[in-house]
Length: 547
Image (cartoon, rainbow, N blue to C red; front, top):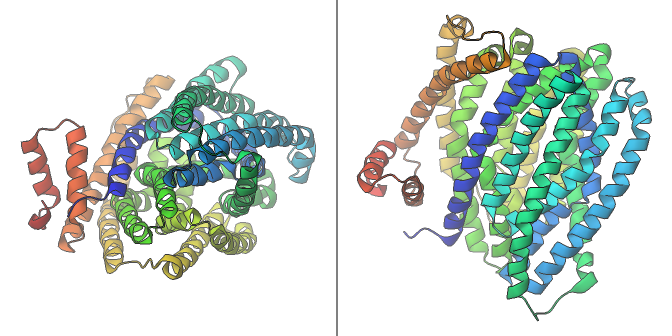
């Protein structure tokens, strides 16, 4: 069976994105270790508290335009209407920047009122600094969205990596010069997005010139295209509003219910949920490239290929996410204790609940993007609204009694509800059905988790009391110590991955297309043909027919 064109595009895009993701996660690891070591939990929690508040505001500053361009640019290019695609780019930028300047001013001047509502006066200066983040973030998001829409994944991925490196470098410099405070963290965060935005805009301009040359003299929609963008964008604002409620309401409600303990608890909560996002390290790149791919297929009215591409994307997401999920859920307590210190180990249930919730959301990600590409955004609105309402109610019930564990449990259940609703609509709108192989894949994940959990129960004391320390009291020494311990912990994840791979072969869950994709990836890595064949025999040991 010949690999489909959509699979080839996803493979090429995810290759570059995954290379960047590995580097991104490594830098993010160094960043979180640095702030956990150098900045008090009180200041770390204050920083993330303010980031959550401004994150919610940022949804309305965006007006859904980043999502709109990812849908409409490939849609019009797929219909051979390049002039309209150019107009989408033009008006998305103009409208987007005008809106964000207004929201920046409002956030800056309303900072005292926001801090007063949460009875946390320390929030005011941090929120005022974060107001300028809205401008940098909007420029970053729109430029990155346009590059992804044009399938320039390598440039978009590099921009994200540049932002992460700049965040680490700027933060270390600012902590050394201004002191270890939430303000120093905020300035470094804002500066990193500004730096990355300049690169993305510079890279984007060259690609736009190529599109302009190819579309010279073709029909343009003019200002009328705004009537296409704005309704779709507003719908996406609704979707993202509920999404942000799911992602940030927990922090805001923790701040409201926990009072004086809020900043410290939010620090633990954010470090734990941030580590849980490791689930998306490889699957996130598939999500990013899948949207323009499926939008182009919608433009061609090819629903059979939409269904096939959705199944392929979902299968690959599970392959690359399950070993990480099993490891995080089984080893949550030693991970947090070894990497961030005993004060953060209390977040192990938060880490486990959020990792499972993230995985539940992956089980509907391709379907959600396919529905959005079909302009059925109201479906995601319904699903997100139901999830947000459930999350809000559960937070009220659980946070006062269970604290951060209750907030994480509420998010997990809400993510699962949204995923169920999206799968139901995908079945009725374009015939998507979860295959039996998905449930076998989940069974394989459970086996991998149980194997790792058994190891963790036996080896916990040895893991958290590793009989060596190479730290010399400096930040560099502490990072070297943590990196060595990460390498040792990773050996357990490899063990879980081997168990999972054995179960995939036992259930015979690989398809011919998976073998073709692996061959292409190994070829890109420069492995000779004989080495690729040996690797294929190891991976597909029980499915010789697809090797």
